[in-house]
Length: 317
Figure 1 (tube, rainbow, N blue to C red):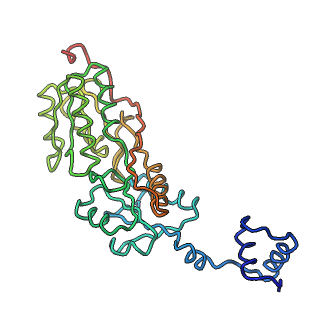
Figure 2: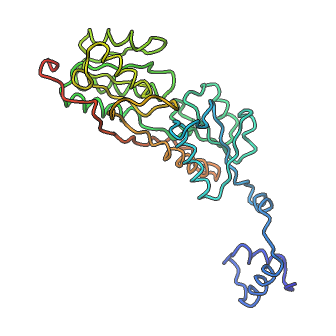
Figure 3: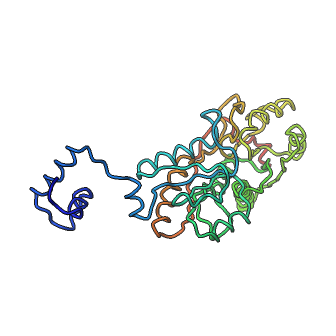
């Protein structure tokens, strides 16, 4: 229709400035495109680029929300928003990580991913990025700095006069739990205050709380925020007011949809979940393009609440 070569048409379609094309020739090509309704073959372009521009998402546990407050929902929102901005499609894998090569690279989610599984992913040399910090030095990830956030809340409690603090939670095996416990222990050690770790595995809070009260603990740091309402109820059942007698701090946001909210605003920190998903897409596209594997921790936002108050003079001794 235009009397020009396929190469010239390609240069016009790609809007390349590498070769100068006469304006009259360019206009003939553009007129022919409009007249025929031509649309570039997206698959063909991606094959020519040796890239599908498809990013995979694989989850090691159920993450789709049953409510908008679900813990994983903001991660998925961040992933989707950034992928759309970069012109990438998303492919959800449900049958197993062995099919990840259908995508250019993959984002993996899950609070606890086995070391052997991570080692296998690294050995396959297929680009991937984990949402959540991993202990392995060769695993690319975007995580939250839970240790620093927990330490900051400990410092806030110490500044208010608390000298006997307790951490209620497993402290593992997930890295996110380990980071919280380490941040708590290190901050208490640096401040020279008493630190107690009360593992919360199968024990009910009703069995944990009496031991802590008997030890004179005045500030409780709760690993699982979804347990906050139950903890407040147990403390009140033992005749202790929150925060009048005992301060309560939660280390993050609820990880279970539908958790009963506490009766007031709890002192806590907010995990940058949407930002983590967003940054994971950036890291993955960089990795797919031949860039370095990165390990990034994003800061958490401290959220003041009503449950951390100044310790009484008796409590300070």
